[in-house]
Image (cartoon, rainbow, N blue to C red; front, side, top):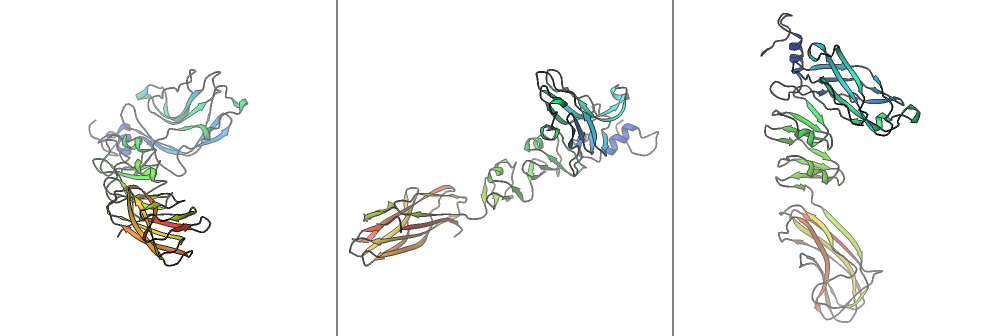
Length: 391
């Protein structure tokens, strides 16, 4: 029958018509086909509970079971736990058993039965799972170790069963799927179809061409950003481990907040420093900052304690080296010897440093005079902070 109508009259509307038309309100998988699966609920549908050593309870659920002969799918509801007894394990091999939902329809499947059941499907003696019959769907797979029985402690179903549940929903509703692969494998998605990918809690909408993440996203770490499928320019994501908001600029994820990296060094003792060219400050090392944008600059703040060792007016210059280039940051001037001074200042590096990891090395030199300088690792301290700034 090419076209059907519901509830016109018994002589017009058949059982097949009823199934096709009622389930037509559920999530489509094409122009005429329907996506089978469990209907989402809280608590989760068909959840397991340990009843005894070899008995498991399957919780309440609603489901749409695919009709293998395509004469209208089956809408099923179970409103209480259903207990299933498992058989002991094989003598020498692990076995894969299954919990399935099965519809019987003798006129179509020749089963001799009419009805529906949650069933235990024992695996084969070789250990492999038994294929599921027509008009069935797998809910769980349960590994049964060799020699398992009630006498050996049985099976902890809740902790060992492998979840094989998949979901459908009313047309236009949100379908929960396990991961990106389950989403991209959906056949014939329609424009506006919504999917929640549970592995990273991201909501996707199919735009007629591709799956696109929508709304603001919350992910556990910045590494999860690379798993987002087809991000669009301007998409926002909150990254929980670093407490930052990132945005997608059309080619890469970048943080929306400038970052600062700071460190404190106790400078190594050094006497007689008088170089007029930049040298690394003893006892310090480079600090690294990730620069996200080409348009931003780096601000460097430095503070150093040191003293003049010999007579003679002397000028001390602090700076940093980036990519082999030295940049002046702060300077001070001595007029007497053995006088502790603290020099501090900042500089904004205006060169167009490309985005990525940038290493910033603390440096110093004598810029005027003839005196020398001393540092003391019990007293002399360098504080340095590097920030990405919009300036």
